[in-house]
Structures are given as C-alpha cells and as structure tokens.
Image 1: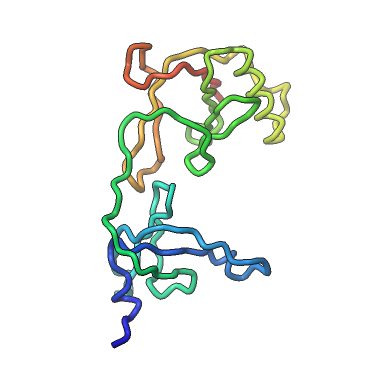
Image 2: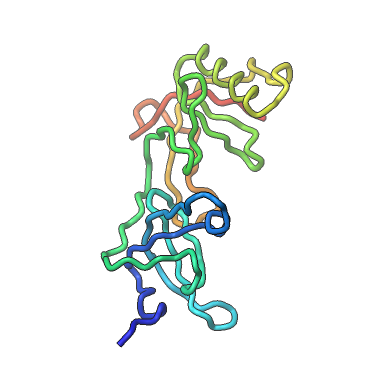
Length: 186
C-alpha cells in the first residue's frame, strides 16, 4: 500500500523544505531541514502542514502536497521552543546582526530604533555609523548624542507572536540575564 502525502504529513515528521523561488532558480535547489509542528485545514478543507524550519521560531503553513516539501522517514517529538530570557548573539534569522564588532538589533514599530549590545559608548557609536552607512542613511541625521546606556533583558515571545522577542529597558544589573546596552531612539 502506498502512503499518501496526507498520511506522511504527521506532527513530528522531519522534512526538507524549498522556497518556490529556489525551485524555479537555475541554480541548485536549496533544501532546508525542518519538522512538521502541526496541521490544520485550509478554507477549502485542504490539508495544510505547519512546518518549523530548524533554527527558526516561526512556522510556515503550506499545503501538504506542495512540490517544495520532502517528507523524510524520521518522526520525532516536536522540540519545545525556548522561552523566557536569553542572551542575544549574532543571528540574522532572529534579528541580531553585527556591525563594527557589536551585536545590534532594530526595534520599534518601523525598526528605526537601535539597540547595541555593548557597554562601550565608542563602540556603540561606531556600530551606529556603520549601520547607517550600510542602510544608506545620511550619517549627518544620526543623533549620536541620543545614545543612552541602559540595562536590558531580552525575552523570547511565543511562537507566531507579532515579534520573535522583546527587550525590556527596566532591568537592573542584578536581573537574570541582564546585559548592558546602548539604545538609540528614532
């Protein structure tokens, strides 16, 4: 008896996923590993898989028969996502990048506010200018005098929340996983 894609699309099944743009590109298709974290029915009743790619916190909801989805033999428990406070590190998928040797993140409604993970104001300034140049901002309009040192705590949000993580500026040096940052408002 041959298994259908609906039979294969079970929670915990390891998969490989390719974005559509990768399938139609002339270069080799990029297959990303992941897991089926859940399932649901589409508006027309068609089966959908909720997949979480390895190293990412959000899920993609796609038809189980999507051509860019390969079902692997392994079925395992779906790992829990880390929650609570964490210490940021360079990770483009989760919004942390490096400029001038400093980890930084864009925050705020439009991503115009910046957080620099350093206690050194000179390094924060250098990273702010590097970021401005890399994003084609006029450095004359970057108010480096507005940079303020603070203690902050970063916290993971639940899966599929509006933001992957939040940062709280009401932290103190004694708080668990508090880090010294420099904040640059918009």
